[in-house]
Image 1 (spheres, rainbow, N blue to C red):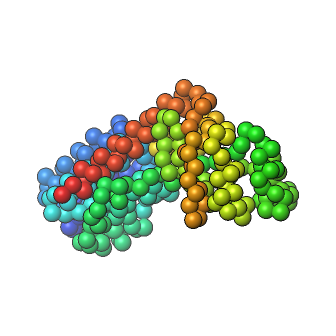
Image 2 (cartoon, rainbow, N blue to C red):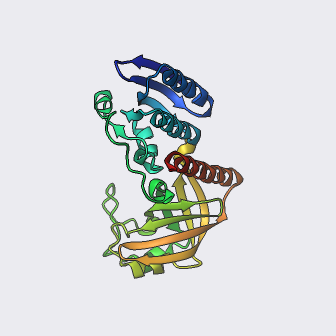
Image 3 (cartoon, rainbow, N blue to C red):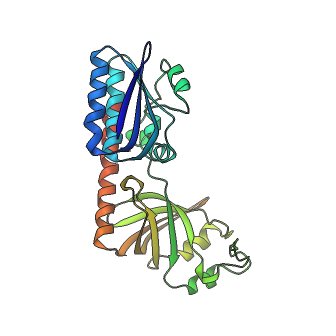
Length: 272
């Protein structure tokens, strides 16, 4: 990664390019320390050319924001790449460090009020909202619970998916033992009660999910439904892993640790 600092009259813009990971955290800290020593208390962090960012780098951004705030100034983010914006929003960092579409808009808002961080830590930190793909190992469940009248249509072939059907939920939590997700039924038109019957306790499912902070594609595992909660707009499910390879479990464990680390960094940044 490369960092270019462009001084302006009352602030500086830090342009980052490349992959922002643990190795480059000291480089950002050095630039931040240099600006503060020079009494430059306002900064714009431009992430347009950042292709990847990990949890340690996000923690460094939180720390830098707090340093500028403690000095009486402010740091904001400008023009993040799509990857960065998705990550920043998924972990809730945009509620601590404001994000703007352009350098000009970011600079114009340096004097604005910092995002509100009143409330509990959980109000600041939001869980990853990545998609969770799931399909039953017993494909007869699809025929039994999803009739031809409400089965989604494959847009490519123009017919129902049949036993190839899969649901798409939203991740609500993850650790090395289980994944939790919500499902609104998609295009099945199913009521929450019927959804809960489809994903009944003890049924086994093939699960696919992403770990974006680890720059990894979909992880796969087999899981058994261990909790089902009906809601007004769908269901919330916990699926406990029963078959998961060691590499995937290690990645999940690292991801959970990353989320815990970021939550703690956000807590420290908003303490008091």
